[in-house]
Length: 322
Image (cartoon, rainbow, N blue to C red; front, side, top):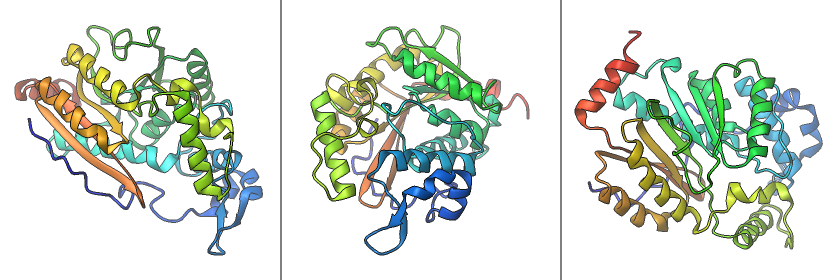
């Protein structure tokens, strides 16, 4: 199956993204009063969050989740990665669009959808947004027991999540779907923000560059909140190796999941990913561009289901309540 190799840049967030416009700082400070101490004029003289400060970024995301998504209790160890809420929300919105397209223009009702978040992390951010926006059920998996422990505390602390999110530890770091999806389980979509770097040294170099770009200062050792834990950012072989393993393993679960998907940050990885998917003889392949400003990314989604299998899936899962 051929795929478009060029990914057009998307300069605006998804139309349903609640953060398409400038942040309402006054409202966010009401939601998270401590954020006020981290607001300062930017180079244009306008009030802005100090994005070079990890504490400020975490408080901003707490405020966004509280004000826009109703998540009042969200905390995790400072050593873990702090995800940008608007970008994570975009992934959820575009996967909802994909489900709608797969169901002839009707978005399946929330509770009928089960989404697997591979690498849910300590912050559990995708389930938080997905439950709030679409009422989906979530399975979150991770190789790190401490991340699962942190995510469990977040789920338990927010009553809207308690019966919507299940968390599972991946005992084997060489496996992605195996040991997580049971033999007869049905997953409507899987999502993943894969480890980006091939080594800790590469991750630290990237974090230094990020902080320097934000602050204008040369940083020798980035604060841990930007570095994140190794399991979140580092995988032997980097993003490409992780995604290739995911593709290879997904074939074994072709009847369990309608749409597999992953973020792909590096455009240079696309050629190899498309080849691997073509070699696996997928029946459907989608490239969904993401990005704001000078940063672009994309979602790659694929399915192995035949047209008859897709029809059966829609009728047995998505239309049973209609």
